[in-house]
Length: 173
Image (cartoon, rainbow, N blue to C red; front, top):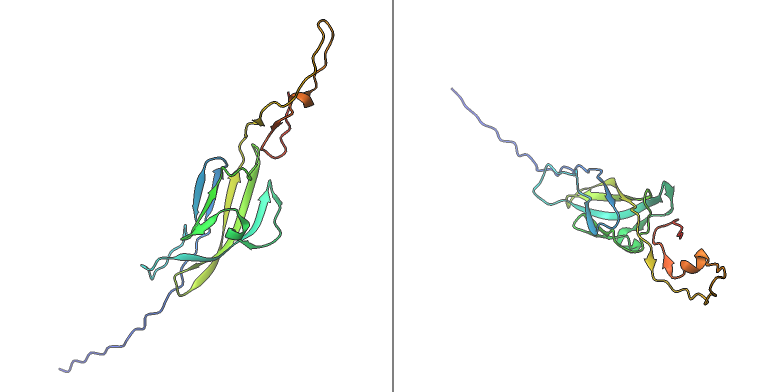
């Protein structure tokens, strides 16, 4: 009987990561929120950690209307920060002034990488507006009136010194 064995070397080849398309919805005024851009992504070659590169905001819509017809890096936009594949946003930022029923959607494009191969993907982050109370203090000075004589006080005088941080809200007395 004759026995023989053959060995054939198998080369290790990197498999590209599989990129997810995460999305998240949060309300404004809930403090700092995080959004993991690697959600749904995987790499069969593990255990090397995945990361994100070239993160860009590709669109911003407010109530369904695009307000940013350009692409720009997240950090340059001032809309949050990216660290280790996680987008962080302070939803209590006073520059975010959505009213109840309004929303803003940030659309991202980026690459998921295993350190060898990068694959493109997208993500969306929706911020829902909540009603913010008016702020301020009265600043109107009303003239003295005379007893038993009609005196007209205008709403504009009573509202002086007050404002509403929500877009499109109108103050009333």
